[in-house]
Amino acid sequence: MEKEQPSRTDRREFFSSVVAGSVAAAAMLARPAQAADGPQLAKVEPLPYPYDALEPYIDAETMHLHHDKHYQSYADGYNKAAQAQPSLLAVSPEANVANLASLPESVQTAVRNSGGGFVNHKFFWTVLKKNNGAGPQGELAKAIDAKFGSFTAFQTEFTKAAATVFGSGWAWLALGPDNTLAIEQTHNQDSTLTAKHRPVLGIDVWEHAYYLKYQNRRPEYVAAFYNVINWEFVSGRYAELMKG
Ligand SMILES: [Fe+2]
Image 1 (cartoon, rainbow, N blue to C red):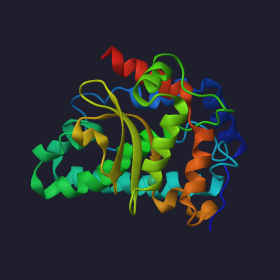
Image 2: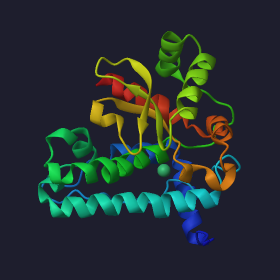
Image 3: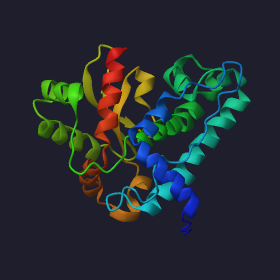
C-alpha cells in the first residue's frame, strides 16, 4: 500500500493551513461557487491539515486513502455524470444534491451516490481537528444543552446514531428548516441536504473511514472521533447558519 508522504514544501503549506485553523476549514465551505457562467465541477482540494494531523485517533494512512482515493472517486463519478448532463454544471454539487428529485432521472443515481459522496466528504474534512478535550462553544453549546439536556446526553445519542447505522452511512448533527437541531442517520452517501437539513457535524461510518486502524470495532472509532471534532469550526458554522 502506498505510503507517500507530503514533501517538506507540501508540509510547510499544510502547516500554514493549520495555523489558519478553522479559517481554512471555513473557506472550504464558504468558497463561493465558480463564476456563474463556468462549469461547476466537483473539485478535490488538498486537506487543510497534514495527513497525520489527527493521529493517533485517525491514522495518516486512512486519511491518505480516504481523501486521495475515495473522495477523488466520488468527485470523478459526479463529474462524469455532470458532463453527460451539462445542465448540472450550472450549479454547485451541493445544490444538485439538495435538489435531487428535480434532476433528470438519468443522473439522479449518480448525483445521489457520487455527488452525495463528494459533498459529504467535503464537509467532513472541515469538521476534523484535534481538540484537546474542548467542546462546543457559544450558541451551539447552549443549543445542545437546550435540545439534549447536556453535552454528555448529546454524546450518548450521537454515539448511538453512529454505532447503529446498518452497513455504510453517516450520522449527523443537522439543522432542520425550522432551525432546530437533530441527530440523524443517512445511508450510503445520502446527504442531509436532500432533505433540506443543513449539516452542522457529521461522522463517516463507512468502513473505509476506520477499518485500517479499528478493523470491525466501529464503537472504538466513534469514541475516538470525539477527540478530533473541530468544535471551534462547528460552533462557528452553527452560528452562521442560525444567522440565515
Ligand atoms: Fe468516507
